[in-house]
Amino acid sequence: MEQTLSHYFGYKAFRPGQKEIISQILSGNHTLGVLPTGGGKSVCYQIPGLMLKGTTIVISPLISLMKDQVDQLKSMGVSAAYLNSSQSSHEQREVEKLLAQGELKFLYVAPERFENGYFQHLLTRATIALVAFDEAHCISKWGHDFRPSYQAVVHKVFAIPQNFAMVALTATATAEVQQDIMSRLNILKQHVVKTSVKRRNLVFKVNPTYQRQKFVLDYVKTHEKEAGIIYCSTRKQVESLYEALDDADIPATYYHAGLSAKLRDEAQNDFLYDRTRVVVATNAFGMGIDKSNVRYVIHYNMPGDLESYYQEAGRAGRDGLQSECILLFSDRDISLHEYFITSSKADDDYKERMGEKLTKMIQYTKTNKCLEATLVHYFEPNENLEECQQCSNCVDKRKTYNMTKEAKMIISCVARLKQSEAYQVVIQVLRGEKTDYVKHQNYEDLSTYGIMHDYTTSELHHLIDELRFKGFLNEQDEILLCDASVETLLNSNEQIYTVPFRQKSKETVHINTVEGVDRKLFDQLVEVRLKISEKLNVPPTNIFSDYTLEEFAKRKPTTKEEMIHIDGVGSYKLKHYCPQFLEAIQNYKTYV
Ligand code: ADP
Image (cartoon, rainbow, N blue to C red):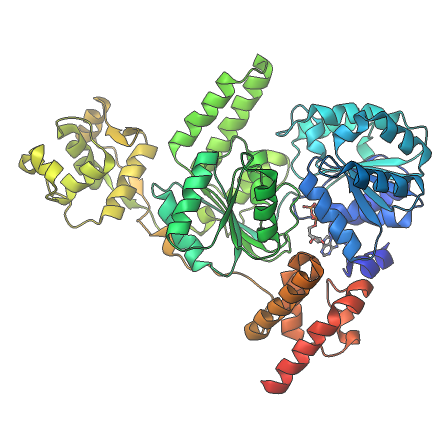
């Protein structure tokens, strides 16, 4: 087992859960593996697949995932292919021929393929080593991405008259979804391998910002060397954010299901091949994209449930290096999801569950508790919770201060305006600005005009936001409203506390990387990797992950013997890729 891992993948040790899952499969047991995103689920079926006789069938819901995985296996010298509707009938026949001749170690197929009688016939004749269900939560109606075609496949797989193990793999399964998968695939409790969903290299942040676009532009600018995904909830929003980035001369690409297959492929490949660092996308992007050096995932909107959030956010930092998952949201995101639920055609039971999931998602955005612990608790209610000390809530050690005085000033200002006004008008009046509108409305005559002239616009925004979150003010379409109940506040002794305003987008981010890395050399090695990637048409991180390059740039190996000891270097890669890296390191050492 270890030998296969090291020979093909170049990894020196198994990650938690991998060895247990592989052992179960090799003993012929139907197995469920729940490993966090980036936990290395592919290895769990690839290693037994390489060790067992016959072909491993991998059922996978997305075409992009198949291609990546097949490319990766081929880059390790393993015979692999996929069958899906994107291929010509000639290409499909070629693959079927290889399957019939027993020449494939791995075959990736979409669930729909099982509806094809000829394919079923081929499977009956082939020697099957193992059947793997990737993204297995799609089997369950209670999962966040249910696909009915997946359930039909299960029956077809059981009908194949051969003895082989099945493995179901997923990252984001609640207890209910796990139970559902187990009963559908006849998996016994003792054959479930589960590791903590915790991913210590991910730093979670929630930012209830009113200036999402500005936040994103600033963030992307200060992280220009890093790859990141920005998720928006609608296609329209994807395009408008992309345009904003483009206007600011920030290279980016965008992706959503409304684009042609060609444009989607282009966008995905530009991102995968490091030609564009940033992709703005709907949730149609990313499932199965194995790009290990995604350093940040920003959610421009709040998703509808924590499973989707964790899965999408988890696309950051698959190489184990520190990465950020930032959730920006406004209360308007909530009504959008409420609308989705109420207008859905699903039965009441289902709607109720979706509503419960939405509530948990909203709680995540509002909690003061550790964000990582909140996520872990959602998936593993029995896990002992500890604070991560790195999420935005844990780091928020800033002392709260009493903002009752400011709250009273703001609320009396809102209450005295002639009519309900937008945020910015309230701020202009508080700051005593002389805009045409303010003059036209005679707001200069109000006693509250200019009472907060020494506060910046951003600070006032922050204070108003706090009052909204605490329920003293309401907002509808950017218009601030207050009702009679605030009178009681103005006359009571109730105290309101907040944290001081801090421009979040200006924060410097310390990415925790391998210590002692020679950054100059690292940048040169990235260039070497890019050249090989272009030449061989293999995504850069399939050649070596950032982690492995950082190790090279730290240890500066000059011989193959030194290189083989580094995590990520296997025999195949040593032979095919390492010479160029050795040469670059040698040259660097000579001239520096
Ligand atoms: P997921 O669980 O999200 O499907 P992948 O299978 O794509 O994760 O693995 C994530 C990354 O971790 C890949 O780049 C993979 O090659 C790497 N990986 C998997 N197993 C190990 C291991 N034992 N040691 C180091 N890296 C590993």
